[in-house]
Length: 156
Image (cartoon, rainbow, N blue to C red; front, side, top):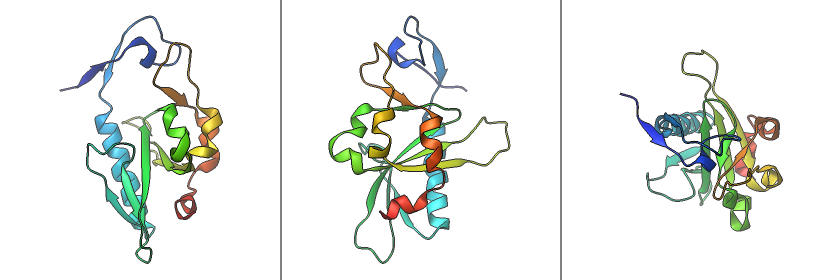
């Protein structure tokens, strides 16, 4: 069974402001991204813990065994770019938060998952919010690609 969700015109896609469309639920894609990131972090020697499902503004807690604190990390996952973002995540205290952008690729393609690790402040000027979009914007690949596999960002 395929889950579908209906989105208002301002949230349906790039440049689509006049009609509604149905798309698959993003929940399986988002969950997959979180688990891929968690597995990669554990493989690299980090401690990582998934946040509860209803936790607002972050998805994982990440740190090192020798450190007393854990960092909040946001995960944004898509099968094909761009990533949909909340412009508020690039303001105030959220500017120093790390976001990991995950590119899964199509379901039937056998390519590795790609990870882009970046502090929100480094992408704040690149959030694109089309006219009519009130709450959301998007982030294009050309802005995140230089941060591919920059796992050390989590230690800064």
